[in-house]
Length: 407
Image (cartoon, rainbow, N blue to C red):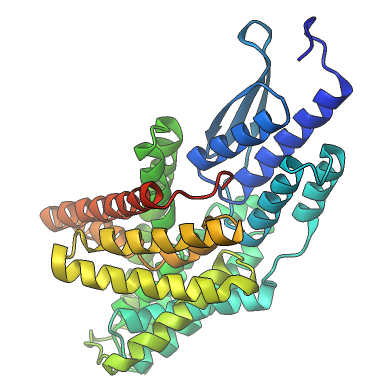
């Protein structure tokens, strides 16, 4: 800022770029600690003095010296995970820092990134919902009937999300309506075709569960971003409660309408786990709009994390097994970021979705709703333990192989 508190044209242009960059990074799922660090790096390179404060629904920025602050507060919608656009914004910030692109052109390019079509269009994104549900049914030891029905319901949930996302009021009840539909359709299918409706429902609603949101909240709390972490944690708990209530309503309706008998699932052969894991990795990439060119890295990271979790569970026990899986995953994604100068999130987010404890949280809240207090409290506590161990593994990986300087 100038000595008299006036802002030069160059400073205004730099400030506009930084604000737009912060908005884009926030919109596409950057956690508070990474967002604030990234904006500090860019600001220093552009000669700006600034302080940042990020929450899940707002970004506050103060430019200038303490005696002459100019503060901007930007209200934000709930973040969406779009790894492709996040990577493009990160690459653009790199080019600005290197002096290859001026801030005026960079600001225009940020707007182009936002307006650009998604990497995965509506049909492929909806198919990713179905593929994720079907592959998770295999991971939950379901049989081929459970896999087929879970895939169908997951596809319905994806289509519903595509329709309801056009209206903000309808989007607010998306999780509740989807959970009701999942349990109701699973109950109807179990009446016509003997299968485990509870397993089908669990697999189908995995795409609704806020496991990633909870893990991000724990990460923000661990890095001392207490307000953002607390807000995100309670948002995750709210979504969990909506899903649990929705499933309870759907199961009650299904029982009254169809009265299907409970059937134990017949698990597929052990070899089916590996193609299911492959499909799950690709589906998760589609859910977070990851660029197709990094699919190979995402698949490798997903397998590495899963194998690390399996080994960790055998050595450390089930509650701490995710620690090793997250550490291996974090090491691999940090190496990717440093070798290719790309954000580690692009590979880490879809891969870590396979590790996050969303289904555990659902079981805990469902048990509490059914008045099984001790079982519910224990399972819910295990959810927080699992999320904490994932965050701990990622933080240790960051300390071992430092991630990139931007994201």
